[in-house]
Amino acid sequence: MASSSNQPNSTLYINNLNDKVNKEELKLQLYALFTTYGKIIDIIASKSQSMRGQAFLVFSDLAGATSAMRACEGMLFYEKPLHIDYAKTKSYATLRREDPMFVPPTAANGRVLVSQVKRQREDETADGERIAKREKAEEDEEEMEIDEEEEAAHSQSTTQAPTTAVPATSQYPSARLLCTNLPQEVTDEVLSVLFQQYQGFQATHVTWAPTPNAAGARVKLAQVTFESPDLASVAKTALDGFTLKKGWVMSVAFI
Image (cartoon, rainbow, N blue to C red; front, top):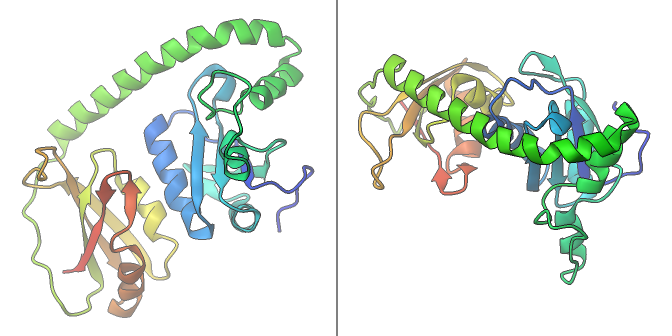
């Protein structure tokens, strides 16, 4: 069981994350992994120097945060064990839920735990003033870096992932599931995190859908394999209609 040196908090502080992972993919995968333990109201992650390898996960209540910390502490996540603790302070999202009149003390749009992150970095480096001056430049670099990563990932996936015909669905239980309406950033690794929490999971295979969605955007589909139809049925019931991200609801069917 995980233990904490901080006071119980509905916000979790996670470090030892793989800093090579794209920010949006990281947030999507964190959401997929932790959402089974409670309602998540915010995820704060950045690739700026002061936040590399770190994230804050804000739950709607303490019970969800505690369950997630106990279950996932030390779990391998992108080949690195998660280090999880209660955050030292409440997130702005939590403070706003407790007090609708709450106004963040900085102009950070209330999303980043500015004072906490800066304090932690100052303690580690004993040179907080230099870090504070560097943050703005790093944020600008981060935007450029993420754009380049997403463009490269899209170009690579477009050329290397040929589209395939959509398998015919079945009304009868099967050990194979078809997942449709997946956003472009979903990969086998991302989808595996979502399905591997269910017993009998074996593998995922993500590819491009042969046709765009109603909005004209390219989408992906995936086949997910389980050990038996009964085990696949449990996952299908739980994840059919799961919201991968805002505006993207996944459909799951037997094939």
